[in-house]
Image (cartoon, rainbow, N blue to C red; front, side, top):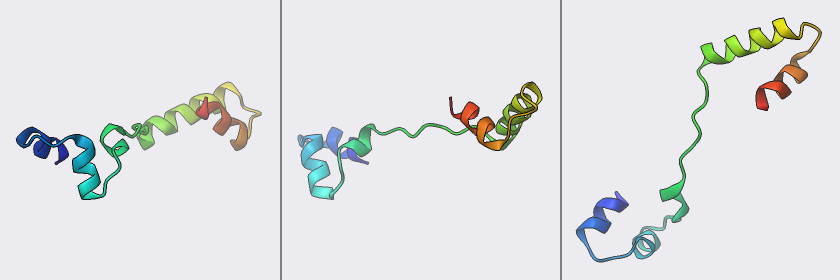
Amino acid sequence: MIETVRNASSYSVRQICETLGFNRSLLYYHPKSTPSQGELREKIEALSLRYPKYGYRRITALLLR
């Protein structure tokens, strides 16, 4: 939306965001994609087979690396 207004006018991104009440950081933020449930399950199963004595806390720590 902001890009459309910016291309159609001579206003800067800062001015447009200020007028609309948006933070400019919203334009540049791209959320990280999360793995699907199936991918996550496969990773958990692989780690639990590799480290059978690890509990859920250690497996979670390994997943977050």
